[in-house]
Length: 225
Length: 203
Image 1 (cartoon, helix red, strand yellow):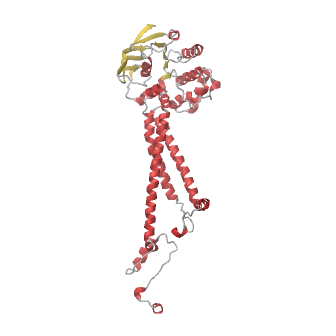
Image 2 (cartoon, rainbow over the protein chains, first blue to last red):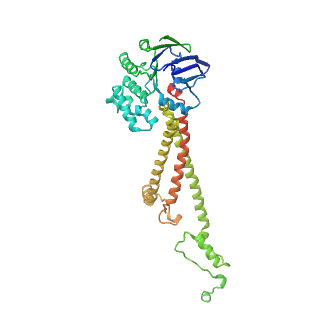
Image 3 (spheres, rainbow over the protein chains, first blue to last red):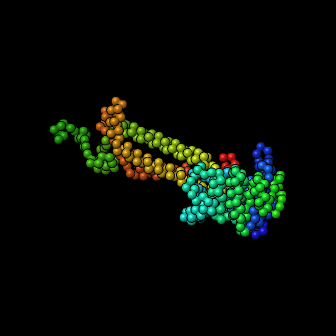
C-alpha cells in the first residue's frame, strides 16, 4: 500500500536551556512492503522521528497520518491502543523488563491487548522458536547475551503482528556477527502488509534496506529507492 | 426495721444489684421512674472521677492510634512513590509496548491494596493474639524486668482485662483497608502520568 504512513511538515522543538529544534518541517511518505533505513549523525533526529511515529512523543507542529487517518496526539488512550495493535518497537538497549523471563517479556504485549494469557503464551512460544530461543524461555534478561536479548526484543515487538516495526539502532550495541543475525531476523519480517523503519549508524545495514533515508539538520533526504 | 436501727424515713437507702452491671444507665432510669422523689445513683456515678479519667485515657489512645494509622498511610504513599520512581524505566517500557494507562494504574493500585490488606490481616492476627495472652505477657515482662506492670493496688484488678470485640475489629479493619485504598490512588495515577520518552532517555 502506497503512502501508508504520511508525515506532513513535522517539527519538533525541545525546550531545554535554549530551544532546540530537532525536526524542521519534515515531510515524507512511507509505504507498506518496504524496509526503510534512517541514517544520520547523533542528534540529527532519527530517534525523535521514530518516537513521533510510534506516538510515544508528540510533534510541536505538523501531522501524522496512518492509512489516511490523522493521529490525534491529545487522545492518549486511543494512541496507546493503536500502538499496541499496529506498532512494534525495538530499541538499541533491548529494554526488556528485568523482573520477567524472556517468555513473559514477550507475552506481556499480547496479554495487555487481548487479555488472554493462554493465547499470549502460545504466541510467545511460537515466536521464541522463530528467533531460535526456545531453550531460553525461562531465562531472565540478565541471563541472556546482548544478541539473545535483542532477539527477545524483536519477538516482543512482533507478537501483536504489527503493521509497522520501528527499530532504533537495533544492532548498535552488538558485535558484527550477532548484528548480522539480528538484522537477518528483522529482514525476514518484511511482508507486503508491513512497513519496517530502522535507524542505524552502520552503512552496511543501511544499504540493505529498500530505501535509505539520510537525516540532515532535521530534514530527511532520500538517497535511493 | 427503721425502729430497730433507729433510722428515720429520710435516712432510708435501697441498694439494687444487677446481674449485668455493665449496662447501668437504662436500669438507673427505670429505677428513677419508680422512685421519682428519691436520689438514684449508680456505681458509675460513685466512681465518676475514675471513669472520667479512663474516658480521657481512651480518647487519648484513640487520637494516638489515629495518628499511627495516618503515619502508616503516609508510609504506604512514600513506599509506593519510591516503587514508582524505581520502576520508571519499566513503566516506560510497558507504555512503549502499548500497555494502557488504566492498566498501569491498576498495577500500582493493586500493590497498595495488597500491602494494606495483608498488613491489616496481620495486624488483626497480632492484636487478637496479644489480647488473648496479654496477662501471660504482663507476668513474663514483670518477672524479666523485675517491675510491677499494671499494679493491683492502683487499678483494683488482679489481672489485665482484655476484651475482643468483633464489631470493633470489623470497623477498624474496614477503615484501615479503606484508607489504604484511598492512599494508593495518588501514586498509581502518578505512575500512569510518567512520560515514557523522559524515562527511557534518562533512566
